[in-house]
Length: 560
Figure 1 (cartoon, rainbow, N blue to C red):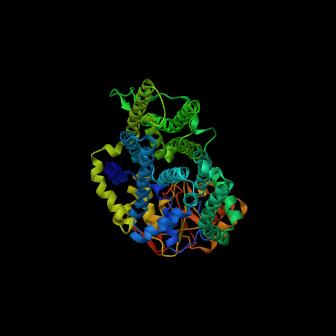
Figure 2: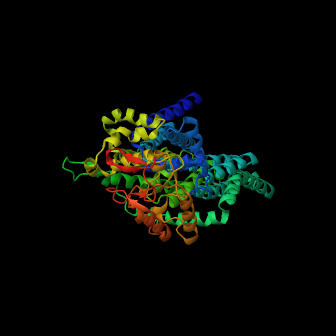
Figure 3: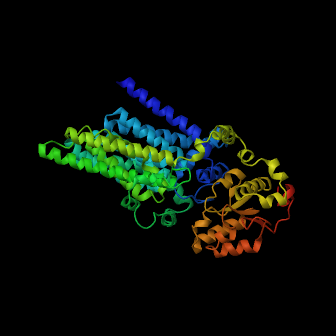
């Protein structure tokens, strides 16, 4: 039996690795660079909370910096981190599925559907998958046998969640409070006041000790109260929209997945497939809680004690509900609880074998669950990026891996000779994506070591990494109006005035549009910078500097 289980884990590992190695061909885009600009600044000598202001994922920044140092500033380093999170998440999800369902077939079916969803998700979300799956796994161990060692593990998991992203630590903390309570229900011997105080103290001490170095770093450079205020403001910017993600459950109709209005007869609707994936992800934990509630009634009627697997199901379902209610601010963010959905789905698919029920009831549940899995598999296939199914993607793999392995990422992103040969006529007919690549190449080639860039836009994270220049003004969230109050705007202006900043660049809207929320910075840019002709306001140059040369046939001013 053990060798069979090991083989299943090996199979899940093999399938996950194969999937991520192939699906990476569609993953090299802006949001997947959201930590790289910070780790690049760190490796270049800048210090967080002093030279640049980060939102709140210090452990991710540190991991990224370490990996970039190990691989030599290659893009592959960042994706190795994503792959590791995804693999760990799928293995933990499979482990939870096996324990909850006691069915290898149900667990494998559920995790295969989850893997299909992973192929189309934005991989910067991979830490979310890991954090909540880990929290449930560690919480379940504590429920099984509450002791100080497992309480310490829970404290460490909370600290890791907090340092990966601060709000994760808050939600994971709630998970462990629930695990602490469920352990008292599951293990009567743990209900003594001494045992509860001891475990709670160990949990808090371990979590606190691991977070203290970060607290000291923040307070020395930025001050902890100011950090809390500014990050709370950022949280309000990115808070879930009005209403609840659970509103989508009010209109469930899986038939919409198949679009029959096309000229070819039918096709899978990507939009409706996503809606179904969100709906089933939100519905599964609620169904799991309902099944546990029915079981509790049966056990109470028969005079039996609540079983540990029921406690684990409650923990997994509650974690999924808490995380989804706070994190699913966009439909595609349903993946945050994907491993937990797979585990709970496997339990439902297997007919929750730990509970009593008639043969007809079990048959009906198996039929409904199998149908839901089939529909979800079809939806996951329907939501799959169409390019991944194209035979041409195999040819793109070699191009992708050249980008990932290049020691000069800018050369793989936009070769110098192509940019140098582009003339004004060709520039005018180049699409926005092509222009952006040319402009980033220009920023790289026409600045010196020690120069910085004002970088803005709705998703500008790749610019500093490809240009290999540090950001100016302490941040790049100008588009969202972060730190736009008078005091923080003055800090940013003071930084800009003492930094060497030849260019200001935006990936989306014109630079000056993004700075409307910062009147003093807007005036500073207006007075001292001119628009590069033909850039549509996306690229400004410091008019106080005499150029040292020109950039290729475009003739843009250079300061190399």
